[in-house]
Image (cartoon, rainbow over all chains, first blue to last red; front, side, top):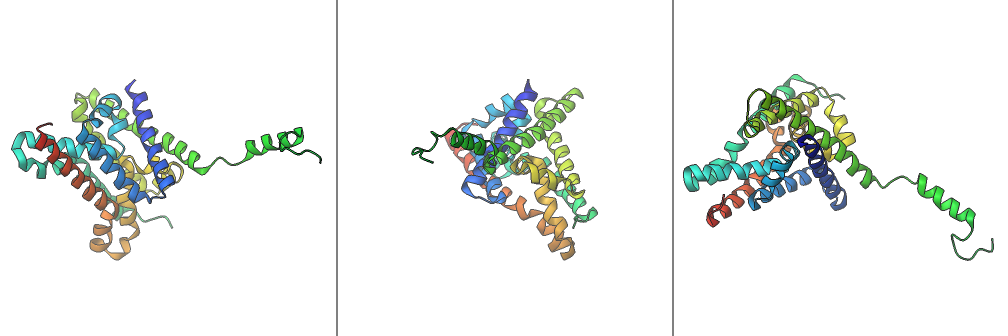
Amino acid sequence: MMFVWAFLVGGLMCALAQLVMDYLKLTPAQTLVLFVVLGAVGGGLGVYSKLVAASGAGATVPLPGFGYVLVEGIDKAVREKGVWGLFTGGFTAAAGGVKAALLFGLAAAVAFRPKA
Amino acid sequence: MGVGIRGQDPRIQRYHAYANRIRPRPAVIRNAWWAFVVGGMISLLGQGITWGFQQVGLTENAAATPTSIVLVGLGALFTGLGWYDRIVKHGGMGGTLPITGFANAMVAPAMEFRAEGLIMGVGAKLFTLAGPVLVYGMATAFVMGAIRYALGIG
């Protein structure tokens, strides 16, 4: 059942992003920034965690899930270290994905040549 | 052709029915549909990878980061091989919004500017799109976290 929800929610989020981009005539970069901000706001309002509970990767794989993870990480760090967690929590939570993107990105960019 | 009101003549009705059938669907609908299909498939793949990590004993929470890492690796590899371009061409935001697209957005400009060297070519261009996403994601998360802290929730 989780697989069905993952497909539907992940797909709908991408379709929504596409519609917003087409109607508001945004660039892909503007759309991505808008959606990571929306994810962080949704995380802060406590609604995004419900979406994650219901659809798993459907909510965590699209970029708003990244914004949500940042807020979750800050919450966790604040519980552990108090107010300084506001500064450390975001990067801590995002560390795995960002570091992987850095390393794999660097490796791919050095190893491959663009196709004409 | 003494028909005053358009559509009363059956030939005109048939013509409009025919024209409606073959008129290209607005690109907006088609784009959204393909974004849905492609984005859904990538999310489904992510759920499958999470399921796989759960089978080897990770909790769903603990499986989230390894799942992201695998997807990012696939996104970077497919970009390097020149395959991810095709996914984005058909899927639009369905290819760009998932975390695989985030990897693509890092690798593609870095590859393209490889000729400008490893520092200002690859090193800087990796953050062409990741930079703005991190800056505004982190800033928003900071504000939301601060509000939650001030209100004593979270």
